[in-house]
Image (cartoon, rainbow, N blue to C red; front, top):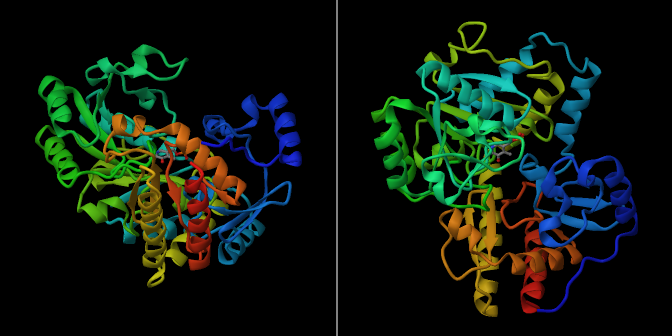
Amino acid sequence: MQAECTPYLQASSQAYREAALAIPGGVNSPVRAALAVGAEPAFIARGEGPYIWDVDGNRYIDYVGSWGPLIMGHAHPAVVEAVCRAAHDGLSFGAPTESETELVHAIQDAVPSMEMVRLVSSGTEATMSAIRLARGVTGRDCIVKFEGCYHGHADALLVKAGSGALTMGVPSSAGVPAATTADTLVARFNDLDSVRALFAARGEEIAAVIVEPVAGNMGVVVPHEDFLPGLRQITEAHGSLLICDEVMTGFRTAFGGAQSLYGIDPDLTCLGKIIGGGMPLAAFGGKRRYLEELAPLGPVYQAGTLAGNPVAVAAGLATVRLLREPGVHEGIVAKTTALARGIEQLGASRGVPLRVNQVGAMFSVFFTDDDVFDYQGALSSNTDLFAFFYRAMRASGVYLAPSQFEALFVSAAHTDDCIAETLEHVEAALARL
Ligand SMILES: *Cc1c(COP(=O)(O)O)cnc(C)c1O
């Protein structure tokens, strides 16, 4: 394997050093620092369509899309216009606006299980609030999450897998009191027996199972056919709620989210990313009888100064309206499939062991000989090869997420030419592995 480094980016490097004096790690969210792939972050100057430009003037084809939201591409004119129009009318009121109801209706048209919806400002808030609601309506304290699934950085959900973790949550961050995660039980993705074992031991105490229906935060991991229906059946049998965390998969795996693809009717659903169109906005919702337990109607408290912010709502509404035009989502998925299959074929013809996991418009490349269907599989892929691949792609003008354990995203703005150009660079990178 040849040494490979990204070209020296003078302006980015300088911006990074300056940022790092004032901002921990120079970044406002840790993976952006690109430490896992042995690179420095590119500081971004602007984006348009499928492209971003760094402060040194380099152009990249972007497969991060702000980590998922930008399914219509960067600075889509209709989204920017909607944002500007909303901004001119006032940035925030802390009072209800009609556009919030419009966005909620647009969400419900796509995700009918969300009989009522509350808007919040981040995915973390959405999952945190959904968990509180599930605990409030069931009067139970325990929750079940899966190894390798990420649900934002609320304390109770920051629990990693560990050998003892099947029965007891172990905090995966300093600063999280053990008591906060003691009620967080961890099961294995795609392993219903691990869920049944938890319910057999503590079923009466379990308020909810929370799951990314297609895992995206250990790289993309696809659910086995019986996994989600099994979760639905087990939770129902024990009077627990099923929470689908579709913050990433909503409007991404399919217009109606993963629940529409896999035919699941969850009790609660969390959305984020795409429904904000690049602005801070997320949502949780579900069965009316549960949502009516939220303040001011019921005893479960939840609130937000900027929740349902009119400028964010305008961006989300414009994005969802573009995405629901006939053929738009199908087109994005077709391009994602072409890219994913193309990478697989190049791996095969170059003799590079790799697996591409894809659902709808999200995918991941794992360097391994084995199918990746859980956290252990993801962890056993070759992250050194991934780091090399990342740096080679970035040097050739393709911007990937700087970690093996992230999903990659295609947007409506990616043309067939973008995909073809990307595949040429993939071929060149694989040839040098
Ligand atoms: C991104 C993400 C979150 C957290 O959303 P933030 O807006 O970053 O707080 C939660 N769950 C899933 C599945 C996500 O992908």
